[in-house]
Length: 166
View 1 (cartoon, rainbow, N blue to C red):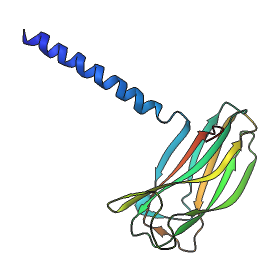
View 2: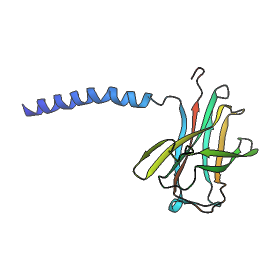
View 3: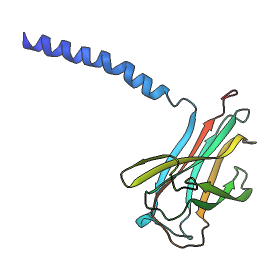
View 4: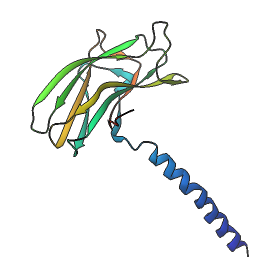
């Protein structure tokens, strides 16, 4: 008899868990790519760029591109300047400088902070078009006056589908 009761509990638990898992996985349906890379020793060096490779299949779709920064609550700057080098599937490259604002003028951090860590996603390009199918590599290098740049824990990169009207 106890076997049947245990079996019913397991089935009931799975019935409750399945909709929750489906809900969680559907919440981020726009995401095409997202990854984080740790910064060695929490101090970002000029000579330690972070690279992300994204395989793009749909050239008709427009995309939003983000850089994520996980930093210490005690980070000394309100922003971070980075260089982004984009390598296209055909080997062509482009480079640009981007300012990533991290806090308001009064020092209040953008993003979510918990304990000693803050997590922020910064939109760097909206409605981006990838002209060719294939692998695009984005290499991000810190471009601040201070080297190494302390209290940076991770750098992330996200590509998501742009949806008209949002």
